[in-house]
Image (cartoon, rainbow, N blue to C red):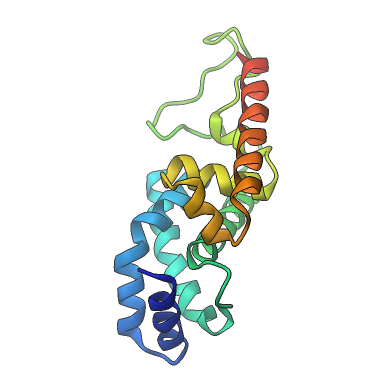
Length: 179
């Protein structure tokens, strides 16, 4: 969907057109799911949150500002909702509860893994600045080119590539220090 087509659809959504929202949903569900999954790392939560993102799009369509890239707009909604979800989930988790990984098993204990400081890639990404997280998620998880990212975020391609390279350096350092 082009920028102009999206602007027409989101304007129709703002006016209450459910069919326009359906068209946005059909076009961007995989993209939003990928962004959400990149943050939450759990299939079931990502499916629920991706659907909730379209409710948020319905509610906030009138606030869309054309010219800043609709993919960035969608990614920002998805990412912010995912971060809010994680914060809420972390507040609700009892202190003595051990989270399970996505495969259903418990994470390794000190006896099972001699490296107690194991950090997941998702945890490492969470240490990046919000712009870096967005760019890394768009590049790696959504398989977007630097040009597409730059267009969707309304930033120069040089800024995008620099931030991406800096983020990758930080991730390598973090992951190497825990290996």
